[in-house]
Length: 256
Length: 238
Image (tube, each protein chain N blue to C red):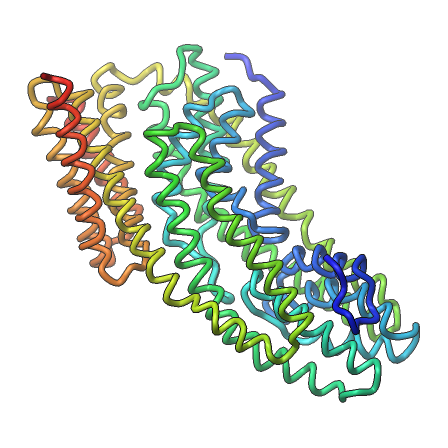
């Protein structure tokens, strides 16, 4: 990572800020949420930008107020805050700009990050890897980590860089990535893989345990999956459905 | 029954580390059930149990997410605890990993997800105290102390979830007599419960995928796999 051309901060300081941003939620608390993590991440930059004394203390205090966003997408805000703080330290803008920047971005970016990473990429990577377990065995685990992290780490670094270099203009760059549309496709992939795996498990169970009754057992297992889907959709707790299925299967295995 | 204490210690160490990774640091998904449970199995010399438990729990918890201040169930504790118990149960039986062991471990320990959520809530009050200390330190001009508070928030996760995972590993040894006491028909039933529960977990995963037309996509996936498997079986019979 090389520092932006006009930045007074060295590449090492910027790298430290990025690495410390990985601890954003280390002290997540109900009142300030990620406030401690944000101040902790920014501290190496604030140390360089402000001389020890009231100016530095003031800078730290303005980042100890409430802050909460998605932990990956927060990299963009961390970069943007460093960009703003650089200008504040030069006297090019007032401190209220950086406060407004954080307040304006943390909500929308949280929604974007939750929708893409937590509700799309994570289920998709998990379902694809789970579906690969019958084919790859234990190698499905590195596939999962590779699939997920090649997107996660690249986007995290990219967002930090965009924040550092673009400041307020990072919103347009993030919008161009069109994450919501990509997320919808990933969610469909997750559903296809989960359905495929359910079918494979049913057919494999029938083939292994059924003997002459193989098609019947496979169909029964598949029907159990469909019934579970319907029950869970109707708000029956997942645990109840799981224990019910286990009870049925135990009874069938014991008495058939 | 002889307890292998290195297994108990290793389980606690890995359980504690992934508990940190889950929320406090990095979040590169080492704490997802598929990864955490499989590695746990590897560490305790029973990859098969780890992978099987990880697969089921990955599907079961696929749709959970930590959105805003809402706390989801702690899928990581459920995965590390269940896989550790399954692995030590396998060690105690001395007869290798079986679907009956996986089913029993899941049925006994999957509720740890809820225990973990309660633990997460408890630790929030500790973090709130740290935040107050950080604010007062910053007010007093002691910035280094204020910043250090962020890192103090991590050790309770490591200690609490590491200890709970160790206890699960230990419990695996004590469950072994129960498994031995079960009649063969019941053991067969538990073995059948394994694919049934995984199938149900896959259905829950399809529902938790948040896809707009999840039933359609899941049905397409199921149809494609069924056709492919039947085709392969027919080819093999020729």
